[in-house]
Amino acid sequence: MKTLILQKHEGKVKIGQDCPYITPNVTEDCLFKFDGEIIGFYLSDVSKYDKKLGQLLAIANAEFRSDKVPKQEMSRGPQGSKKDKIKRQIAGEKLVTQYSTILGSRAPKPHMRMPYPSITPVHNVKSAKKFIQAMWGACVAGENLIKELTPEIYKRQKQLFQKVDKQWTFGNLFTSSISNYNIAASYHRDTGNLVGSVNIIFTKRYQSKGGCLHVPDFDVTFEQKDNSMLVYPAWKNIHGVTPIQKHHPQGYRNSLIFYPLKAFYEA
Image 1 (cartoon, helix red, strand yellow):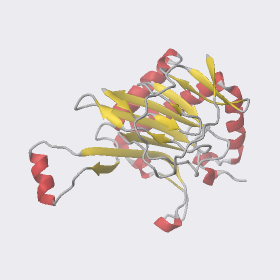
Image 2 (cartoon, one colour; image 1 turned 120 degrees about the vertical axis):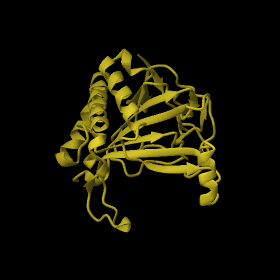
Image 3 (tube, one colour; image 1 turned 180 degrees about the vertical axis):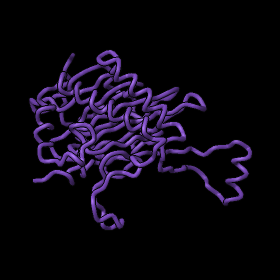
Image 4 (cartoon, helix red, strand yellow; image 1 turned 90 degrees about the vertical axis):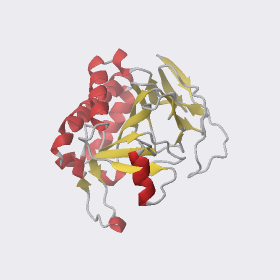
């Protein structure tokens, strides 16, 4: 596998700014190196490395898109009155809907009346069991690929997790997971993540383009094809997700993400 040497790029991107559409410039399997250190990698199709992982992602994606898995929804576009919404529903007109589901551990948020850490309530939903099992399996399989391709990253994250209580782990190297449907994020940095760690981002898509991760610090945009895997230290740099453009009414782009929260690290 080739190695992409990342070089610092001067940009003027600010946190909260919308990420524009940018043509991906990282489209092939590669490792990422910065300052002499491997910090992540991109695989355009995980099935080439682990056929079972590809099957698990297909199951997780199908379950996530079904009614069996609870979701937090966001509708974009003109809302109008309740009467307008009912009228559009009868006419079969749908707004651009985005939704997400979080698994694993949630950090305490006293300002939101959650003073204690907890496991997300989705785990108590019987109909979501198959989704949770597929996501857990995909997480562990992804961890095995990290161990195989970048043993130094695996070893570092494994050492960090020696100080994370087992009850708060999802897989072996992560605490939490979020699955996003058609969500393109503005520029941000994952400040809640464990410093020194990496995230896994699996992508499932159909008849769409965009929804690609852009890291302005290095002027790179990862293509994130269907069945792709991106391993990256999301705490390290500002990044955003490019707009999602559908080629078909049923087109979509889903991201299945695993991340480690620093709130569960016992320093």
